[in-house]
Image (cartoon, rainbow, N blue to C red; front, side, top):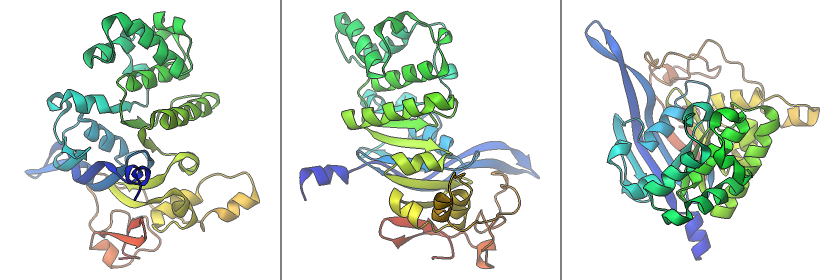
Length: 330
């Protein structure tokens, strides 16, 4: 195996049986928890774009914040570059913080409105000693140009800029430490449609130029079809299905995945024919405080069996690299 192939197959992040529960009180003396992340196993290969997709409340952002150390895991482990980092961010080494960065969904709340862009971008450069003090301004200019903003933006404050420009500053801040792995938590969902394509194209260029690995979190499956290497679907804190992108869209297996894909809007009959047969779900997403027994999707699944209501399915490899957690295949 040549070195390029070996690097492409190297696992940079491995999440094992990860659980993140939040206490919400008691019922009859029994503690109640929101099971936001409930036994997730996930691997991300170096240099790939892993798309993590799910409806609101599926747990995808909580998974990201747990990987970042913002939330502490209730159980399980997070292995980053061969090192267990299953501890709060405050207890992680500077090298881990440098290599693992995140871009949040809302740049308006993730940037300090009282600081200038220069101050925002200077902080990670100083903390991680990326450049000498005398070269900081030059590096700030480089970061701004990297995200296609002119140098004079360093004197602006976030409140004086539009949402797209603020998100570009957020991306520049994440890249200031020369990270290897970047979590993108719905980075375009709060932006105008006219700005979204520009941000996505910029992220793809940066990923290729800097050989970055992305965990791209979104609810937009159409977007994943065009940019992701692999796609993973979450539902109620658990992973339903994961597969290489082409295989995923050609042959979706889980009823929930087929339901999501069949609901993607299209503009032509040719595109409609490529979609899976319409899957009609019934009912609402159950509460993560009171997850039903068996398969958590069975209350909405038109293909449920008796075993689905009693036994939680396990993940199986239906095709090479194509994993699904469903009794139809186990």
